[in-house]
Length: 93
Image 1: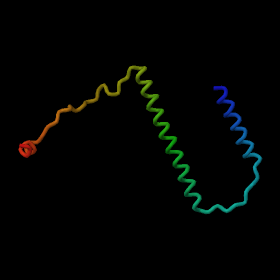
Image 2: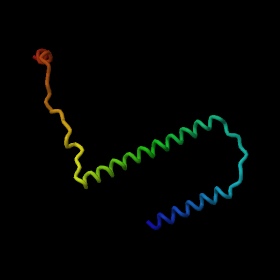
Image 3: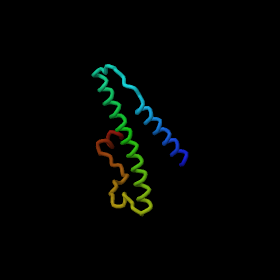
Image 4: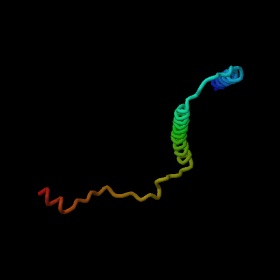
């Protein structure tokens, strides 16, 4: 865990150094670039949401199990019986 913390610190300081001491760029940004930027941001948000949902369900399942909560306790379930129409029976004979 300490090694991961050290890597995170080095990465943070390297990024901060790059931002603080970088020069300005004189460039033209085409209006269509904003469309790609919005798509990239939306993709990241959707991916983070999906990952959060997966970990939320895992955590909820673990907590429910430790507290003895069964979410299917009061649910009504249909039977597995298969009913056939009389018309289908006549066709089969």
